[in-house]
Image (cartoon, rainbow, N blue to C red):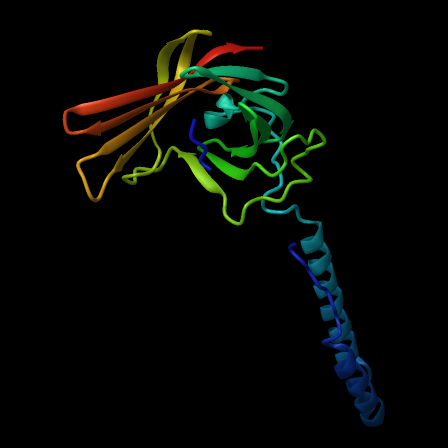
Length: 237
């Protein structure tokens, strides 16, 4: 199967201090009182409150609690789910190690190779936040302890219609697999055309509610010649 793969906030509030002292001295000499000092202190207070609020805001990639799943969130795989796939004569395993809000941590094992993926699910999209093979053999892994990629990779976007990207073609398909028959299956498709030949590669992925990815079909067409491969779910628990 193909893999598709700190905010440092400094609050140094020194801007108004020198001005406040100077204005106070001038006010004392002029007998005008401390009006400017009061305004400066108020500004400092407002700035401090703003900075404190900013530091308390969650990071942009922080998980969002999902209390009532809708849209694509219905296809998020559940915690502890283990799925086994047949890839020609080989077996591929996907295991859900953690679910935090709308983010899912999975380990994909193919032979002796292991890959960690973290995906983020919203009502209308699914993004790849992390994909790495550098943690092979590690079991003490958490979403919080992993560093996201510089830019999330958009895997599914219901609003997307750009040629060459993954496009949603259906969300109510019925799919038969070795592991059983699934309804309300989400289907996404990507078509890649070669710039140097007539070759066209069509990849179709299927997602089932509460299970996530369950099948991928790839067709490579070059004129009248077609080659097809399937990654199919054979069991889950």
